[in-house]
Amino acid sequence: MIESPTQMDQPTRQNCYHCFKPLPLCLCARLQRVANRTAITILQHPRERFHALGTARIARLGLENVRLLSPRGVASRSLRIPPCATPGTGLLFPSKTARELDATERDEIPDGLVILDGTWSHVRGLYRANPWLHALPHFALTPAAPSRYRIRREPRADYVSSIEAIVQALRIIEPETPGLDGLLAVFDSMIDDQVAYAHRRPRKPERKLLRRALRSAPA
Image (cartoon, rainbow, N blue to C red; front, side, top):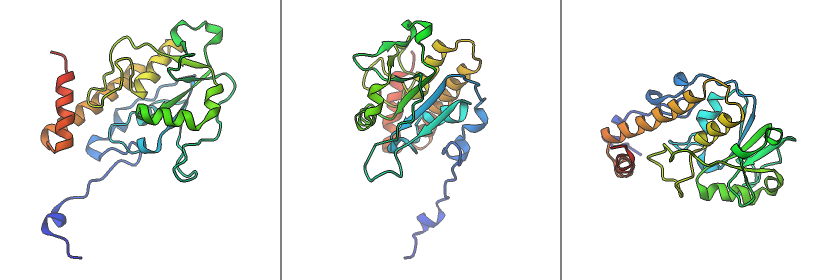
């Protein structure tokens, strides 16, 4: 097949192999590692792995005590992940039985947290497919402010992105740990990059994101 001149002249976009972002938007140099003592385990929906605006990558690259697991490589269409929670681990999930993390007694604070990463629909799918999660103590967060994820819609005003939830949880469990604000600064810069890109190349999907960001921007 002979490529058209438009196809031949179009440069191939190169991505960073660590954060999966295009090289001009690479996040790696912006991240300073945070020495968290609370073990963070992120169970990621397969469709979230290469999402351009996914935030689990910030936690994976920015935290020292973290692991990211995904059901890829398991049976086709299966969301099952082998049990991986150690004793003392809790699940950050807003179920009806979940306790508010910031109201939990110190001797009941979990040593580790499991976070489900994806859209709310994806998260519910992961939760249903992995019954071992149901046996973990459930914890919930009440955000002090709406999500800063202004170009990706959350289903409810009190839902936040994965990195925002992780940072808020670590602030409660280990408030003395430095560097957590830096993770949110990288998150903000990733969103700013995307908005700027949408300004420069306003294709239809980016126009929708841009309108959403502008509506959410402070006056």
